[in-house]
Each structure stands twice: as C-alpha cells, then as structure tokens.
Amino acid sequence: MTHQQSIEQFLYRVAEYCDTQDWDAYLDQFTPDCEFHIPQWKSEHEITSDPKREMSLIYYADRSGIEDRVFRLRTGKSAASTPMPRTLHLINNVRYQQQEDGSFQVKVNWVTHFFRFGECGLFFGTADYTLREEDQHWKISRKHTVLLSDRIDSVLDFYHV
Picture 1 (cartoon, helix red, strand yellow):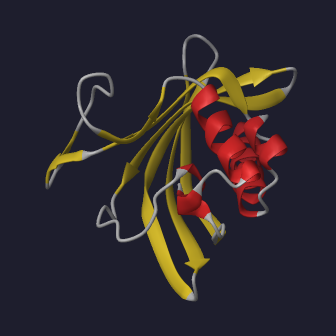
Picture 2 (cartoon, rainbow, N blue to C red):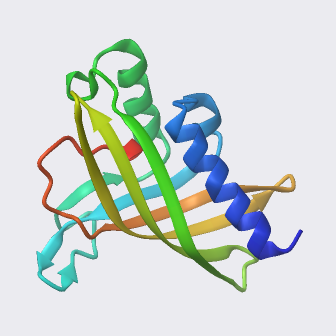
C-alpha cells in the first residue's frame, strides 16, 4: 500500500469511528500530546493563529481535552450533546508531504453532515493533520481545522469536524 492509500484509509477509519461513536477507537488515533485546534475568523479572510492569545472555536493543548468531551458524552454530562447527533464525515482531496522528522503533514477538505432534533445540517472546511507512525500505525499528533461554514446555529463540538 502506498503512503497516499495508507493515509487516506487511516483518515476514513478515524471518520468512521467518530460516526459510529466508537470513542475508544477514536481516541486511540490521537497521540497523548496531540493539539486539536479550530481557530476563529478575525475577518472575512483571516483566521486567528495563536490559540493561547486569540479566540478559538475549540482548542485542546493535548488529547485530554478530547478525552474530557468523550467522558461528558458517555456520562450524559453534556446537555448540549443530548441527544447525540448522527454524523457522516466525508473527506476528500487528501494531499501529504513527508517532513524531515519523518512525520507527515496532511491536508484535506471535509464535510460533516449531521442530524439532530429532526433537522439536518452540515459543517465544512479544511484540516491540516500531522501524522506520526507508531508501531506501524498512524497517529494524529496535531489537527488544525478551519471551519469555512462558520455561521454556527447549532452546537459545534469535536465530533462535527
């Protein structure tokens, strides 16, 4: 299998774990130090760049932020996510470049359709991943997502992107 195929299949599996709410498998795809960031728009064509100084839609400095969200989903402590929406993640235009340290910088376009309270909606955008190979498996060590459909008239959570 080529790097292209391997990376694509990995990202499709991550999307499937999220769509089927297989949270253990989903979390296992991220390194413990994984940064997860969705910046906010400053203007029509400029996003924030420093999550520690500027506003973000979502920012987790490491995987514990996603783990906390999953804990809240599982225990019913996330009123905003009750009931959980059904989601369908679509990923396309996958391109990658190997870095000097052996990691891979991967760029994708994505759309997530969701259904909740009898209504359909969608979010779409681009994402930059840093993937590292660990024990012959890909792991996400950074996910930076730009939400292009930033008129948010429903809940936005990690499972939407």
